[in-house]
Length: 251
Image (cartoon, rainbow, N blue to C red; front, side):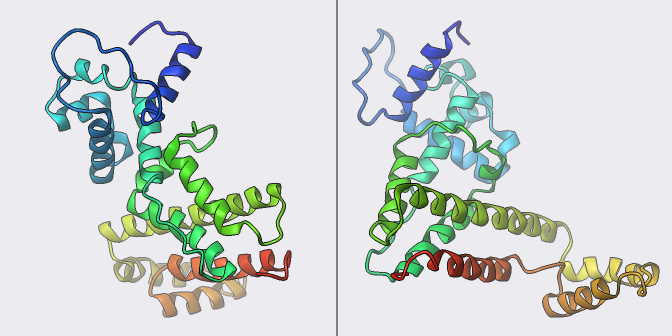
């Protein structure tokens, strides 16, 4: 909406993100603002949770608040900036990790919290993760994660890598779990298997895919579904923690 330079845009976004500690802006003359930036961010998160990532727009969020679209630009400069604020607000809800837990459970808590966040807010999976601007919410979460691992014998780069690996594993599994939920909303897994199973059995040559047929049958009979994202997560997390544990005697 403006001809601001990239530097101006970066400064405004960071000031919005860190508004709790940033110096207050000089108020322009005019009517008192009807809502706050926090209200705008909460409305954006609620809209995304309810209707999905694609439905988030300046116009739609303004409508949620009973405002005109142009007035919302006095709070946030763009949809991209709003999304950055929304991501940071959700990250700030990340639960604390009990320091009394055994080290392995503290590491598991990092992955479980990331997965739970994505299952609660599936639209986060559609937000590009690279170069997300660090706000107080994301930084507080990172501090909590680092604190959970501090003192276990890892160097600083290892601390960051462990958090990255746990987060990426949890995110990948959450993506599959979200897809399974959406698929189940359209057709149950049992209905899907009733429709496709007999056709696949008839068309798939068993002599060409003997292992696929055997394992696939075991999976289908056990889960009554194409897979088990929840079980996959717990199995994979346990094996991942086994590998990390080898790096230190304390875990």
